[in-house]
Length: 468
Image 1 (cartoon, rainbow, N blue to C red):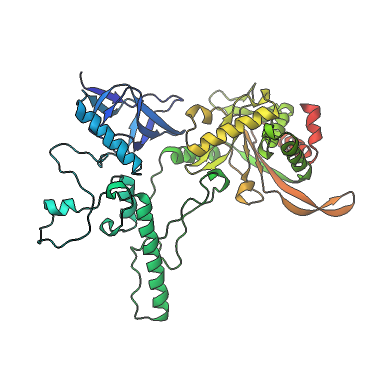
Image 2: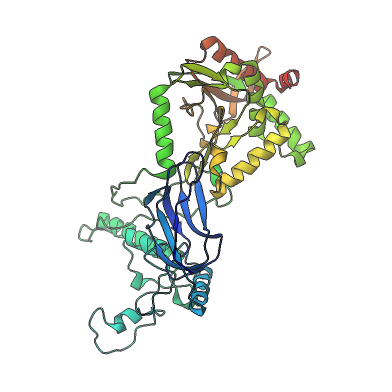
């Protein structure tokens, strides 16, 4: 069997490069055909890449964080090393079960070439003769940290791994062990600062003290709490940092910058009584829970109906040919905030779907977005976007159009407000609708008509029956 160099494949959708996010294998591992070996992030989504060869991993050609162009060397696979390869793969699975996390280049998966010593679990201190640093005795007592993510976390927060108590199998230090040490360090820092406020003689915390981390408070519904951040303990010095603008974040920045530069957008808005729409939603949930129709699906149905009446807003501008392109289909995008950032999954041919079908597709795409497994094709080709920013707890916004689309509908939070109804002021469920449009494709009359139609459907959903 010869050596094979597997190059970064064409990931489709016109993508020309990808960033290495996470290696699933290390040098010396045995791989099978179509085994996932690396996760990369493109401008569209995270993609798991399988290797087309079987054998032993000879080299990984780029560390995590490297941006590769399509066709550049990714991984090299050579002949299998017999039982040694199987043993290496078994060690990888063992460490994966131990909670080591993702495997990146340079750290290995617990196995190393035969001419290097393997670390053993750290033992309690015992009385030993003095040994010079860097000797075998020093290496044997080094903490066993398999995951590079754990190493990086400890390094960033100034945690001494030698002082961390491991809880993983065979003395492996896990992420939770380091997080516990960070929390303890932060508590100690806050206590020191508080003591210094009472007694000036008490030494203050240094600028290397790390802020406390906050665990994911909502692992099941990451999109429902998109504003999660890691709070910094009071009194902890702030630290400047530079974050590379890569992958999805760079793609979002490029698209929004182009939208602001190229599209002469305008925004109009209106307050509406959404009580009727909420009553319809509640009735459907009560009488037909099997359909799974929620508020977003009803708003999607309203958008599709409005685009049928105002097709000029379901369009884009071809600047090269100086033409307005009115699309013969509605590919409805909806904004979703995820742990990876803002993504806009696209419901294709939404104009051909019933409300129940829209609900099912919205649910499916939302689940993929939460898992970070949306394929690139699910993030392209939109003709109109619906943005429910009310989940952020805000009333209004002037959203940026998702280039090359021509319009975007935003929905604020729905809250109780005083509303005049039949000459009397009564409490109603009120929301604000904002509509941003490309002034090249239409004037204010069409934009106002679109928004008014949407508002009327929200206030009186029966109107939809006349335009189903």
